[in-house]
Length: 200
Length: 226
Image (cartoon, rainbow over all chains, first blue to last red; front, side, top):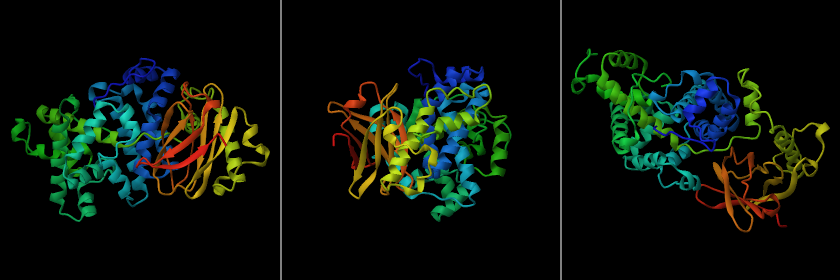
């Protein structure tokens, strides 16, 4: 995720996080209002439950506040960092239920490029459009495997069980799918030093 | 696992996509992370794959969180940042409480009619609320909508009985503009939210508020001209 956003006040995400780390309340407010809908939307998409999604979204934003000082822009965009925190918290909450509840309708909506919304038409940035287009080019089974892993945190073994396929097939779908996605996104996926990503 | 090597010869390379998207199990993950310590080429490839994997998270829709989201956040905020979100938001809770009373009175969403007896004022007497309309769908009454004038002005929406939708776009019309106010989540066909009105929309000029489903169908409409 290579987006470098700047809000109406002209401050980029990275500038806001730096200011939050110094205790700037206005920066904290601006950051929350810039991202609360996206964070809540991701949590709700994964959890399908408003109260729990609200709790997870609040916790994700709080973690961003608390850890603003250690955010490293060389490792990826602030949006990617925040959404990954959100996803991991939501997946942890899902796993605490002791069973995964995957909403097929949600998965389908995420997967189908044809579900362009007014929001995406009006204010989509190039990256989202590119991801949708790239995903649409993948075979459906590879698309599903990527969405299972990205949104529900499923391991290859769990995807194999979910799809009733051999483990090797699940691994191949993930590998082929993500490599094709990377190729399709090309320069949008700006490379940088990232030996590991703690949040993953 | 092999040691440091030229990228093309790394057996571990095939596992990088699984690591990037978070689907690698513990043992394989640990071994691959150890390999990455000594392989710059694999680290570079992983960075590209991570960017692609992170991009998938953008597919989730933006949804406005429920009323009180920011207030709840303040309650959990670190000390030096606590209070940052408080100014100007308190009245929202009062408006929402009043709206619940109206909804309860109209027989809508009875399960949420938990307002205390001491707050027995109707929404019409709440600060800022200037206009009210029933939200109607094919199935009949599906909630209420209120316009609250102020700085900024707001639309408050309470929805129930739209079980066919997972989320809706909220659009207001003032006779000149159709303005989308955002996308909002529904749980079991229910939802409630408060959203700021853009400056170009006058609270007194709003003619209707519509909830539009994912397929572009108008699922419910509140007519403020009646």
